[in-house]
Length: 456
Picture (cartoon, rainbow, N blue to C red):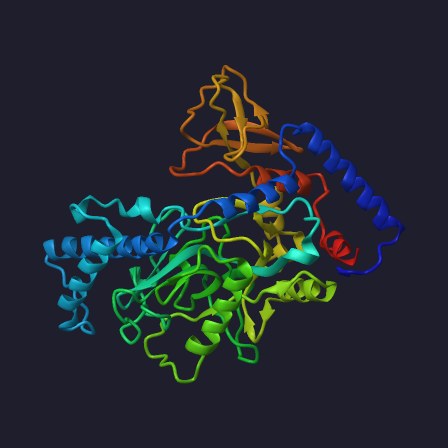
């Protein structure tokens, strides 16, 4: 792909065709608020919404620790050994610290009444799929590679590190491990600090081996994990974490800070505190490194990000990527929410770099999940974040309004096939369905179109 090259006559015809197709999509979903207005409204809402993120961050850490306490009681009840050899006599002191932390966060009452999973669920900010180009892309947006793997929130506190998936479930690594040691503050016995020492990171866990450029082996295509699930138990000891964002570092929360600052903070902290030769690597079980981030101000920067993702190579590290994430540099971090200020871009070249047939299997042949519109119609289906009717299943279908409805493609149309049998499946977002429709009609947004908007 010639990113940033002047378009020829054939490109003009294709671009015109794509534009006409997107115009027809907008007419079909005329009730949908324009993307630009959504982004403006999102920026306006974050300026007006002032949450106490400091208490929110502490509460997340406390609840993760409460789950650990609950598991320890269960193990002791079964007669299993729980206390690690490395902890020694420090465990009693750590219990006192946790009590003080619980008091500060204002939980009060019986500790066993705390709903751990409810607190952990929805801690990740979710991007929308990119189906249009923001008008201020070159001025206000940044771009970073989207690593292939399992998205997770990594929490480090009390000398241990654990990872939670997008649904709030603790990820079990190889050998059924639920906790591991990391070099970030609070994540190992060397960096445990006190009750105010903790980190919360937005990461992608990748299985298989990851090597520095020049080593004998690099990550293979078949090592990449599925985007919408991935099995953390499939790796053979070569897993790694790529950090996309930072919500708290060494007790200081950054939820309310903008993307530009959070990116600078993350890169500088890893460079000075984690990658420093003075940091002991003895307790660092899994490689952990921040994803690079690029400005969208020039075509050259966009090309570097895109080609790096396609070739799986950034800054000396090799890791599989299946997309790009465009982020408004002014956006704060909103846990548990889908935001138009973060856009996920995918195309065939990026997906195919993770293995032949990946794009066909994960995009062209993949169905969608919708929800029953709650207005008494019974047969109308829509996306999880929008009430626009996408499929009319008919009143004769017995659909459970509390369960996602599985739909399959017939051409470029969705046909309902009944309630999803897999428990916990979430309906897809509107932007994701738009992305699928564009790909199936051969009119997806291209990197050349994105680059041309920067040239203007």
